[in-house]
Image (cartoon, rainbow, N blue to C red; front, side):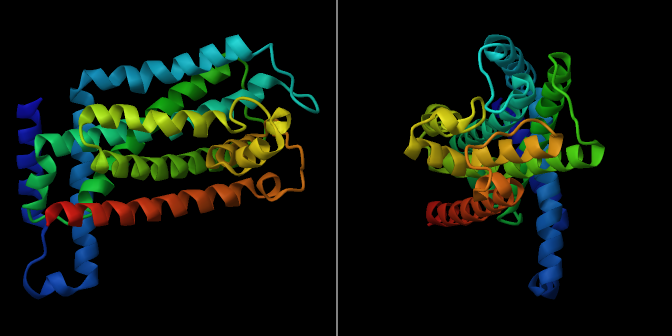
Length: 295
């Protein structure tokens, strides 16, 4: 693993050195943007290659999402009735998708913490590399892994009775929204990986808040049966908003106690606001953290 990390570091460094703008060109915003994008592409490639080489990641990418679909569909499939009627498995799949992309936080946090522990972050900071490339490459690499997991879950969902009922265009919009939300959660994971004291801490800390955020939501059960305060928290939860939004876009049941509430009527807009807000906040926090570490 150490040899692989060293190879990755040297490869990324050589690529970054070739791309860094020199002289007056460094002052132009266009050149700096091109520099950032070019370095981010190198780091994305590095993270995708790392995924292929580290076989311990494969169960998390391939087996766990399929298990989630089968377990929830078979265990809860006939036990929960939806308010107003509807097929529970049609309702369930959006929740499983939302949970899977929310859990993108976990491998990102571990990956960043691992890079910190190996000293790769310090090595990258000494290279002629754009400061944001490390995080952009990490989050885009995780987006690639998430795409594989979501594809497998969709195929498995079709096998257990889930259907897309409103056409290809709206379904594509649903998957794009899911990718946007997963991208934002990956940025959140990058920040938690930066502040974790060790890889072990990065493995355990996200679970302390990921489980409550995921289950105090409409991901697996309608919120109508929750106590009043908890129902309101669940309705405004970002996991609830993305699950409700993609249910609407897939044409699946999406019951709300108050169909005139903002989360019920504007789930897509609320998901975009949550995703953009979390991405910007996490990016700012990551930048500040890196500056603090460098002092």
